[in-house]
Length: 76
Image 1 (cartoon, rainbow, N blue to C red):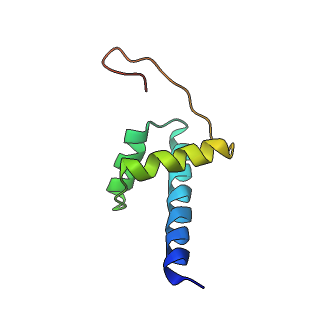
Image 2: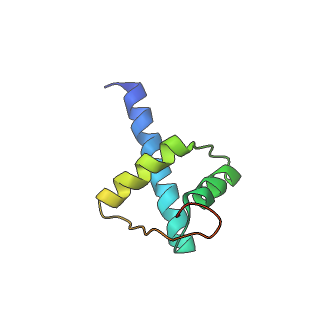
């Protein structure tokens, strides 16, 4: 058994659980909101880690997302 791979998979699973907990609590959350809440919990996560996880959860039909037009920048 590869210990590094096991640790990596455990971290990924824990992060997914944290993300789902944030979304469940807030009902809707922008990625920037999720990153901020993770940061407040002392879990530093980069956008480059968050977006693939959100995409994987969407593809697994665990969550959905929608685009919303913004008057102050690109759609969110």
